[in-house]
Length: 191
Image (cartoon, rainbow, N blue to C red; front, top):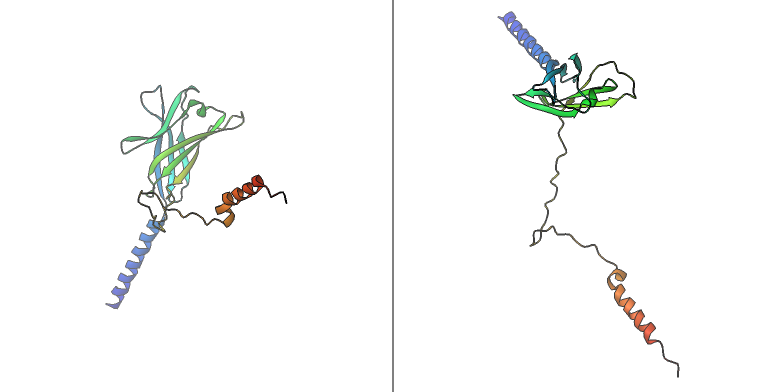
C-alpha cells in the first residue's frame, strides 16, 4: 500500500511538471498576409509568416511582392473573423530599391489583431528581395490617476485659487496716481 501511494504521488508530480512545461513553452503560430491592389478584384497572397508566442520571434515562410505600379494603392492585411484588417500603402513601397517591413500586432492571447507595413529606402541600392517581420505585442496605455476630486463652482467650472499678490502688485495704480498728482501740482513757490 505504501509503494502505490508513492507511485501515485510521483505520477501526480510528473503530470504537474509536464503541464507546467507545456504552459511555458512557446506556441508556433502561422498567419497568412494578403496584398490587395486597388485594381484587383480580390486579395493576393503576400506572405506566410510563422511566429512564436510569447517569445515574439518571427520567420517568413513565403513572400511574394505584388507586381503593381508605383502610383497604385495596395492594401496589406489579414482576414480576422471574416473581416479584412490592414493598412493601405503606396505601390512604390514594393519597389526593388526599398526594404519592406511587416508588423504583426498581436493581442494578449497571441492572435493577430492588426497589421502594419512600412518600407525604408536603401539609397538606390537593390535589396535582396526579403521581407522583415516584427511581432508587436499589445501594450496597455497610460491610465488616468484619480488622486483628488475636482471641485467646481456654481457654474460648473473648476475652482482655482488666485496666487497671493504683493503690496506693489495690489496698489501700483494708487502709488502711480499719487506720484502723478505730486508732479502735476508741483510744490509751492516757497513765498
